[in-house]
Length: 143
Ligand SMILES: CC(C)(COP(=O)(O)OP(=O)(O)OC[C@H]1O[C@@H](n2cnc3c(N)ncnc32)[C@H](O)[C@@H]1OP(=O)(O)O)[C@@H](O)C(=O)NCCC(=O)NCCS
Image 1 (tube, rainbow, N blue to C red):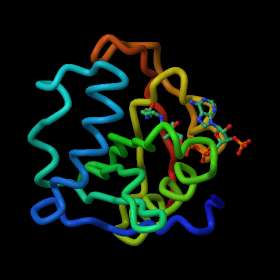
Image 2 (image 1 turned 120 degrees about the vertical axis):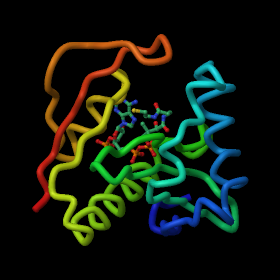
Image 3 (image 1 turned 90 degrees about the horizontal axis):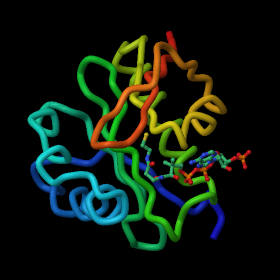
């Protein structure tokens, strides 16, 4: 299925929590073995959340914290490498720009650094570990 059919929109954490949590449960907790207590934190309440839908099915999500951190980017395995992640990230960057959140950053899993570099992010600092997964901090100035 082409990326052009994937719809991205802002999601309301209070009313759409179950849909967002389902994607993160599948990708981070079940697939990547991230401990439950690390996955759910206090930042979900204050973040802007995003959800991607393809043919009525929720296939990806992410969040933008008020300080400019993009995180919890998750595309369901069967929908990867078809452009959904890129479309989601571009939507987040446009939203951040509108909010005048000009400096965005993220903690990229080392395996995904190339993906974010394709979207203009640059690495900074050394490798560090979160949930036993190697990460690099990446930055991008968007306005
Ligand atoms: C990382 C992730 C969000 C990318 O989403 P996606 O929908 O697969 O990405 P796209 O299809 O838009 O890929 C765009 C490009 O990045 C590349 N790419 C995607 N994932 C990549 C990865 N993990 N490593 C290197 N390159 C990657 C693709 O090959 C593609 O390249 P191309 O445009 O030259 O063909 C997705 O793989 C994912 O959810 N992974 C599991 C959870 C995760 O690791 N999240 C990131 C936490 S930092």
